[in-house]
Length: 327
Image (cartoon, rainbow, N blue to C red; front, side, top):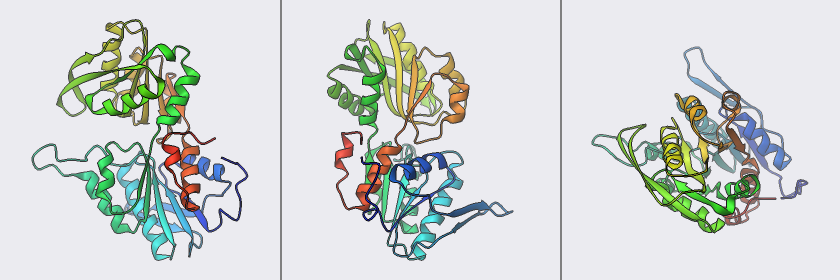
């Protein structure tokens, strides 16, 4: 992507940052050669959220960057208020850039009397007036079907492939491993692109966030194993999976995850586990986590989001970005 973007082509565009990830928002703006728009986000004394857009958005193409991390409920409400504020201030189009979609794991009714929370979040976004959503590696792609507006679900895969080739010398003799059966499609795609083998681990859960039993399907003996998943929360699954791979004869284990949530005792688990590196994208802020864990490395995906915004604004196709990293 050309750094000196045509100023005429990037007219009538505004980018605003929510409170969840200002660093990523700034990087996106820098890639596009734009300044972040002025916005005030704060709490009233009774803890209600106050949002005020600090400049005119009339007739503008507005992009609001807010990831589903940190204080998730507060950040979600803030995003809804920012969308609504821009819509009623006569913005021509409002796009929500949500790198990590909130409540994405609650996408189906898995128990009696359980809500489908991801569907409710999608409905709330629709009602707020958003015209378009950009996200990265949705936990399940059917979330796109919860919305009647365009959803661009980008993939971290091209950036992951680039990282593997640049940082793992033995990548031609590696094996890509899914820590659960649900991620089989993701790992087979990466394994095909690298022309290597894949394996998967079947896990049985007795209750949420706790893994009971694991079975490895595939041969990892004397090979570098790369665990790939879309997100890691408490890291119980990937740490157990790493132990399983080492005991099955793997020489080294890497973990590559799109969304590094790392809640609870995740960091201490990673520090005690046998990973060479745990690689995540910056859809969620990782600066504090990296201070506590030297194994965490970050792939910057701001360029992918910036190029998607540029192409969307100019009415160009974004499908190129599904398989390529922007230059």
